[in-house]
Length: 316
Image 1 (cartoon, rainbow, N blue to C red):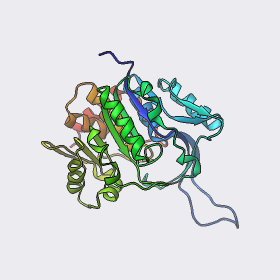
Image 2: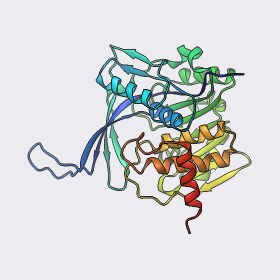
Image 3: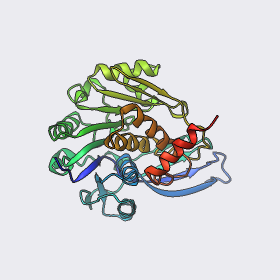
Image 4: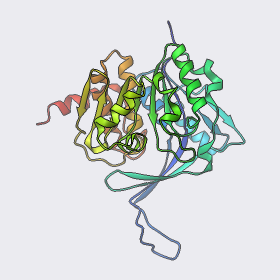
């Protein structure tokens, strides 16, 4: 069956205001200093779709943007990255979310969200738009628009009925709080779930990555990747276990590293790679992302990632 898209990403689209090297000691009654400040497009669906397009995938995005300057900025960046933006919903009533990110010297970060982040644009109403794809990525599972069990179930049912590969990236909740039990009907429809270590700990109540993966597998999910940050990543399914160390790099900003990882994994699966090889490719995508400020800055192409892996294989 021919598909219009290789990958469609559904979820959050926003602008990140990234403050690097924030000094909490005030220089005046109302003033603080930081090393730098920058505006970058972001949100899981945006980051993943831009990365997938750069990796050579025919990529579309289903998201909501306000009719405002922040929305224009996101739309422009997506278009320049080669993402099909025809599915984007724009509204004068709902502003494009803007996230403030505080990035530490080691690349770790904390974020501040606001009420604009909780808008649910009901992607399940647009099944005819997102089912014309080989793979559907749900960005921000457990956050809007995927913090409603009925929406999650409806989107996954539509994707699976269309024969799409389903990948779900996760986030910690910020407004609505769901558990794995709340999504018990939907979870078996997920081909791969990709929490980071903090998210996996939160949703499973376990501290060991293998035990975290076992909990997700017991919910009926076919494949689990626990992203372990500076410790690498763990891939598990009922028959295979792959534990990869992190690449040795000088991290500048970890914003979007997990999203680049997810895009890399999904795109490499569609290229015909085995899951364990796709995980290695994804691990490199995440590492490359951290070498520049912003989620969509450092990753450029599949050839870049393959060269990175080749060089890494020759390191002593």
